[in-house]
Image (cartoon, rainbow, N blue to C red; front, side, top):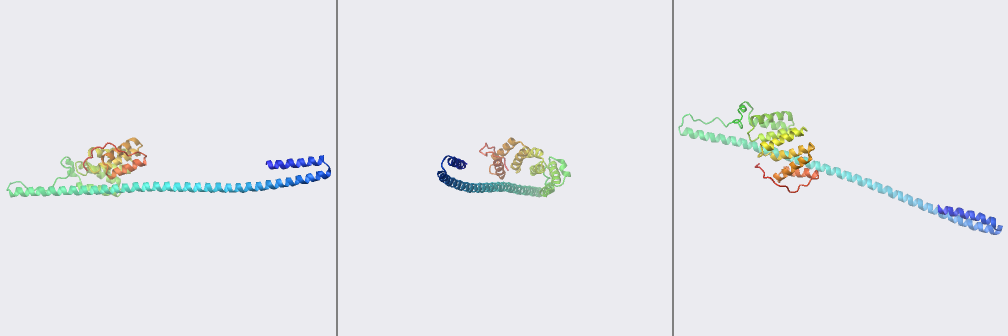
Length: 297
């Protein structure tokens, strides 16, 4: 812009000189000024061309930078989605493994119950044989062991056999027949509340409520497992799922306390690993906490 102004001033000066001086001298000055003006015009053209080229290069650089930023943003988003997917897959696998372990515990408990019944039968048969050998009249071998929980619940004599009822309830639970399974587990607790598997039945009642989204009722029933069956093998799982239920209800602090308490009571359990993972995703430190003595499992 300044060059253009200079050119204009030179042209004006040339005209003024032409008017003030003789014709021959004026022609010479005009030619000289015209030469200078032309040189300045050429210089302006070259500068404009250089500016246009630099602007084009700068625009191309900006476009390339914007494209790189967009690619980086897309890559970051993809990485975040992959990490979230991996975290979800890890959580799902942990829950699946936990469920498998729970099923194994149930199988072991059922085998223990059957073994206890067989042992009781053998003891009764041995006692009956000793009585007969001693010639004591009126002493005969008992027909079989009492039904678990029947001593404290007379109505159990009218209920289905404990093993069959529990097995059917567990089968329906694993098949996703939650309403039917819930009724069967409730019957089991009603008739066999003192049996070894009563705590498991109570846990599955709570777990059905959790799966159906009834987190408030689930938290209460998980708590029943902890209060009524603290020595059962579902205590750790019940405390974990109680913590999950409280978090689902928006009770963040209560849920965090429950998960930290679980880690303190069962530090080496798979439920403790799940609790640590959940706390980590919540941004909560899992530092050492005061441990409570773990009940026998």
